[in-house]
Each structure stands twice: as C-alpha cells, then as structure tokens.
Image (cartoon, rainbow, N blue to C red; front, top):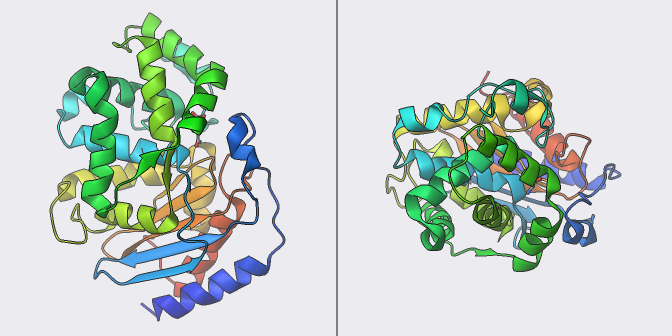
Length: 306
Ligand code: GLN
C-alpha cells in the first residue's frame, strides 16, 4: 500500500477545501445545533500506527454507529440461532427509519443496522443483561476495544426519547408480532442512550480496530472471534448505510457504518480502520464529506476490498 499517511493528508486537504453541502439532522433537536464546519479524520492500522487530522479530539454523537457495538457485544455471548431468528441479514433498500417492510415481514427486521433491527438487538441485550447492566456492558465493550472510557450525552438521549415517535411505532409494531420482549419504554430508553454515546474520531478509530484486526484490540486481546468479525463486516458492507449501501460499495468499496451525528467509520480488513466526522448529511443520513473522504482515499490508494 502506498504511503498511507501522505495519502490521508492529501485527501483531507482536498476535502477540507470543498464547499459543504448537506443538512444537519434536525429530528433530534440538539444535533442540529452542532457547528457544521467540524471535520476530523482518524486512521489506525493493524500495526498500531495512528494518523489524525482536523478536529479529531472533539466528541460527537455516534448515533447509529452504536448499532455496530450493540451487535458485536450481542454476538460475543448469544447463540447465532437465537439472534438470527429475530433479525435478518439482508439489505432493506429503505431508509433507516422506514416502517414499510416491517408489517409485511411480520415484525422481523431486515438487518441489525436499520432502526427496527437495532431495536431487536437492543431488546436482546436488555433481556439478557437487565436494565442496570445493559448500557454499562455496551460502554465496557467499547472500553475493552479502544482502551478509552466513553460516556452518554444525556441531553441528546433525552431529546431523542421525547421525539422518537417513529422508533416507538416500530417497537410497538414488533411487540405486536412478539419480537420485542422488554417493556417498550425501557427498550427505547436504552436505545436512545446508546445512540447518544459521544466519541471523537480518535476514540472511534481505536474502538473499531477490532473489526479490521480479526477481533483483536491494540493490545492483542481477542475481543471477538475472526469468524464473528467476518460476518459483521459483511453485514456492514451490505447494510451499514441503509439505502446508501450500494452507492457506498460502488464509490468507496469498504464496509462502512454511518450515523446521523455525521460520523462514518470504514473497515479495511487486515489493514486499517478509518473514521471521519463532518455533520452535514446527504438525504440518506450519511455524512457528505465523510463519504467523499472515503471515496477519494480508496481511489488514491488504488485499493479496496474489491
Ligand atoms: N438515533 C437515531 C435514530 O434512531 C439513529 C439514526 C442514524 O444514525 N441513522 O433515528
């Protein structure tokens, strides 16, 4: 691979100069108050080298990126069978908060990265670990992966709890199909709390290294098994950016997870994890600059998973 740091620097400089298109998420009110000019990139290689650019120590709301850690935590202790009978592994081709397929498909969400699917994985954490321990277990999983203690932004969690009517509808619809076991209010509280975890691109790159490194963190501890990581990355590739996943596969060529806080992470298996943050989003809820950076990076490197 060509000189990674130089390639990142060149692409960062180029994308920094571009005019920022896109809108901030407004349905969770505190998210639209964030300065749209933030731009940060962090890359960490499986050898432990790190490169950071821009506002890489500034924390932002990871939002749907938390769904990746919820799934990973769950896969680390539940049986595959009990998980995959309640949620699928197919792209939905629809917005992350769509309800359309859920009724037709009898309350079984297409995949764990759309909101309905993440509500099911969150429900499984809640029923297996209990109300007190479930959130702490997600935070502990991130700590074990990254070596960094992270926190929930309670203001953002509360705001989503007050405005997340579509997610509540999904949870009740799935409960009517017996695919939600907990109390919807407890489930939604946990869901909003993990979506409101705050991390910098530096924290997030370190936490996501396990997905590039066969399940091992920076210290070499095995957090997940290689076969689990293989599966998580393939679901990231096909479903990690909802109805933007095909476009991202075409333009970037790496497994990606996006969030409406403007964060994006991408995994280059056996090479590196890279995270980008820039708040303005395209119509699918993907960071415009994040996507541009990743597209130019794999183009500049001349390599992707394909
Ligand atoms: N908490 C957000 C929601 O449920 C997450 C969506 C996202 O980041 N795509 O709507």
